[in-house]
Length: 423
Ligand SMILES: *Cc1c(COP(=O)(O)O)cnc(C)c1O
Image (cartoon, rainbow, N blue to C red; front, side):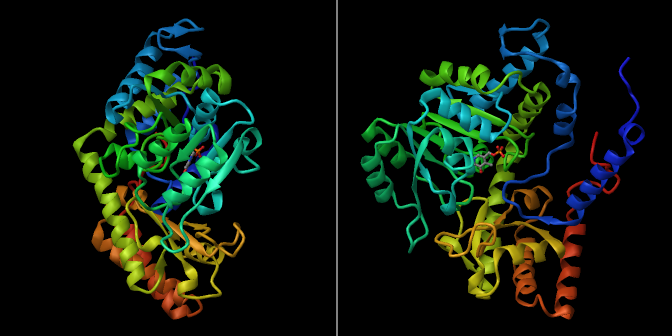
């Protein structure tokens, strides 16, 4: 028999760290745009005995015996993903969004091929060509950016770069961009040069699931995504594609990029996809966007400049120089974290400061919306954040505002007070 003693008994040191982390998640207000709080049922699926099973291959075509129930689980996840997003084909085995991108690139490109994506310092992801990342080491990337005035994507510039460099792939979908993306226009540019159009929907797939953002699936050849950001499911990646790419995608995930998939995570993804297809999730996804708009508006009203003037999705960037020319993203994010608000520093477009310092912050509303906060709380939170930053050297004000931040966090906890952080 397996060791059935609880974690507190087997490894108290580890149990305590998890318990302290759940307390941190309860105590802080979380505005990291890529984070969320999963459901209890997701943790159950994620922590299940499915982790014991090897199942290399795909449902009905396995290299191992005993996969009849794993086949059922994976087929469920695949069918739910296809139905939810209207995709021809889905692969649910990618361990994360980065592996999904690696597989998608390797499915259709050769090493040395050219990819046109958004430059990192303008909102792109590591896997969009960073020199330290596999993407930058294997492929030749060309970066497009945003317009200096509007701070929004300049499609004429994308078209110009596409015709100049003739990449085999064009990537749209970002880590730090708050505006709708014109999927049809990107596809048109890709078609003009015969490139594959890949959408990296890691951040916005949850909004797409809840009909709170235009769906790229009808326009893109391939869509990669994560299941743990706004989608509110387990950690992991998925790939959606047109039928013509199905075989190449499956082969690229296994055996090119990965060995055995993590079946407990596939089960948890299946559950997340089911939860994301319900009517309540539409309400949730639309509330995420409404909250982001109200939070951005509240901060703007307090004099903190919002990049591109607002947001269409779950996140936005603010330019700290607008309230204090000396204040850096590093200082602001560390100060806020120490006073109850956790978020991340982020380069703003054309940021003169280095990426580890930055002049901006990135804020996102999936987690606070999961905790139940609405517009009223966003107005208060926006005001508190700007006041805290403005008055950060005045102990009386800092104390006052930190107390209000704490009250807000206490009123909207991520998990019940007696929840140890594991199931
Ligand atoms: C988060 C993200 C990914 C994937 O990240 P993982 O941490 O590997 O899951 C990929 N692309 C974009 C645009 C992202 O924001």
